[in-house]
Length: 238
Image 1 (cartoon, rainbow, N blue to C red):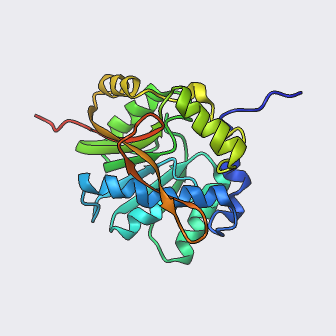
Image 2 (tube, rainbow, N blue to C red):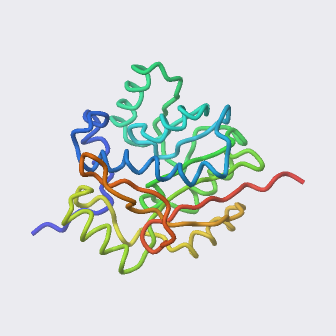
């Protein structure tokens, strides 16, 4: 029997043609996470007229939500078909969002290009976390903010994301995550400091109800043992 592939990022291209259709439950779950994330992120930044990078944008759910808030948005992702879907949907809606193909370890942008970098459902998938954060620091303006969520590494998070979300409830395709890549908050804090970013507070992210379609709604929670959100800042120049 073949071993289940983990950290399978091909799923974002495999389902790109139906990204905005609302026909696929796990894709709707990703879309439903956006308001819960922004319910917490919004307190740290006024998005209007800010240059924002959506790092790991997939098909564009977060990028379009940021565009709705008045941000000047650039999205980047290695999934070519997902980027194509994001571009197509933005063009259909008349949105001036720029989408690029690329990876967080090698961002194709100038230094000090962005007021904010948003990175959700990404850090637990990257090849080189330290290099990604180094690139984030490079492209952020002094005083800029990095807003993220990721998955904690412990027995509970493994049970919740693999056993429940992937295998039982099918909220995610099997193989989406590799629990060995999950990141403890203390580890991430040290990685921020090594990248010359100043860590801020964190909070949990999780289910906060069910919508009319029977899908989960999400929002901030005090429990950080499963999914947690946080921010870090690039220091201002002295």
